[in-house]
Length: 409
Image (cartoon, rainbow, N blue to C red; front, side):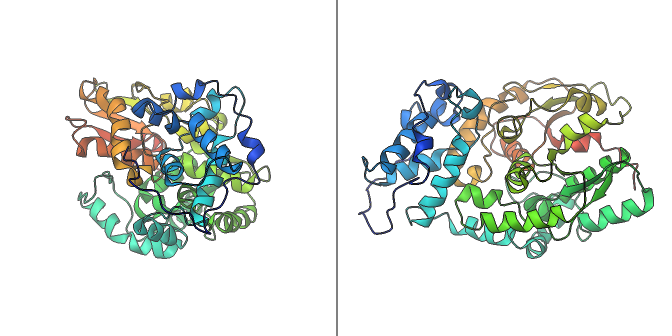
């Protein structure tokens, strides 16, 4: 971790952190259970680079016992936001909620400013049609097998047809009669990786579920939340109105981070379900057995198991893929993606991924498939090959793609 060389002078923009939520900070009992699961503490051995250490810094600033300085900002930015500390905490400290507020206050007070490139990306994400237009060259590149960035993985996204148009077309042709659900398309998913959305639509319809894709939906706000930007509540209200007007039994998400953000948006007014967990409950048609040589290693996104508090991906769903599968080693540990963490802290993200990805070098299977249920995690796993951490061929797939047979057209 690179520490700030000099501390800036205090200014009128230096505001106390978490004035309104200081009571939350005092609930930490300093037991240290979070240290065992925190990737940045395990990597650095620095107490301040742990949930317990950050909570202490934030509390001391909120109580006026510590002057605001760049060290606190630095340690806050070092946090991946994986939320592994929350289930480990016997005091049930809402660390994710506190982290979100601290990040927002650091940006609002001028103590931290996200990189211009990420602020531009967040601005685009809040404008889905423009973001989709800007993402068109990347969809073309991916269809052609060209991967100009280390985080891009192979795929065949539709270049022009949107997920909403595709779902409407398939619904008119197939006419499923089961429960009616709304699909959260996501901003980056729709702009760059929309083949995953298309596969999700096919799998849902194949399992007799009616799929609605509200065109009024927008970015869920997860990117803005990670960056501490102020537009989160506005984006959440936009989605709230779009999904409540859709007249559906549930909203399903194929990205755990976006699903978690949408849960915060809708609260108890409308269920928000991870699509794989939903299929595990409603039942999923099994595929024919796939090649005996292929082997799938399943990694579990942090925001699925720690954020949404799900036990994992249902075994019935994984069995239904038709592949031989097993959980990847350390499947519940963070891969280092952290929303935009692998862009803001690429060195840390690479070190976190290194320990998790080594098994792929000797893993059995032909092909070897690393499967997960979050597109940002897929990007991080793709980077393992580009960074030389994995030195043999492997594929990165979303579990929904493994369920997809392509026979619903």
